Image (cartoon, rainbow, N blue to C red; front, side, top):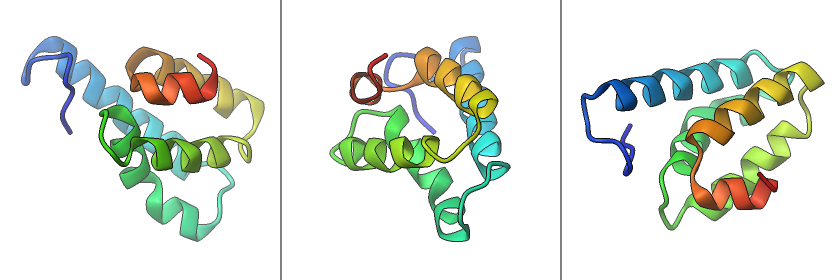
Length: 94
């Protein structure tokens, strides 16, 4: 888990890693299909860093978020707003 805007092993990078794990757990506890749940860690990793996979992963995450409840959605959006990639934020209108 890397973050381009935070040096490794700093308080900021540790916070981002913890928030990323929190988002993964939140989605794994959501009412998603087993196939979707299996892809959650990879999708989250790909939307947190700007890579060539980010747009496709952002579409997947957007689809997943449309299936969760309002409270889960609100928490996920808060986390994404704090640590998500620019591409993801743009695709979600944040």
